[in-house]
Length: 109
Length: 162
Figure 1 (cartoon, rainbow over the protein chains, first blue to last red):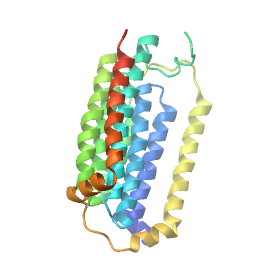
Figure 2: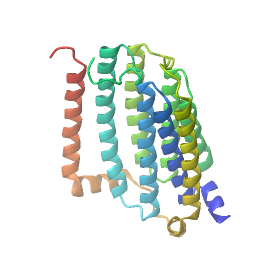
Figure 3: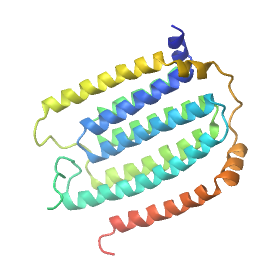
Figure 4: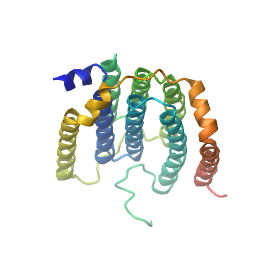
């Protein structure tokens, strides 16, 4: 019972639960959708879930600046990943005239 | 307040997952990122919330929407072949994962012990800058180089003939 009240009132368990559920929803988007753009959005959701867990643990374990510094680096890498990933999507579309991942199942045309 | 932002995050993500229109899915992504930024605010970390809004709901979603509109594929095309078994198996796997996650979080003694500890004061930009430029200066420079490399790589990938 105390766990449930902790989840509902914003304790550490609540943040970790939200983070894990967000990860699962992102995984569902990657697994069940065929458009590569929607799969990309699912990957972004999973990355955000990891960030929520990181900053929740950083706060509840003492709250020094190291967690936020790591978050800053993660966000820089996420921006790089988004730029290169979307460039790859554009390249794929140019080759196949489609963003459907079921069509892009061969290494060579 | 926590429940509002948590529900905003999870509902945005769920609507995104079952959305047909890609542009609407991109806007659901904005809602989700805003919910996550609200969670960061509740974690007494306004710096991370500002970064989340600027980089994610600003830069990354705008880039994503640009690509969606550039490619002119606003709908997912119909499936090449039906895969009913995989579809139900993936949903069942996710339900099992969700139940397992709930049990894990509810039954964890470590989380309960951490939750009982005293909470530190809020994160400030000054503390972040001190830690970043005194202990992580090399990482900061490498991140700058990485951004440059990603920019050059993205241009090289998209350009038709270099």
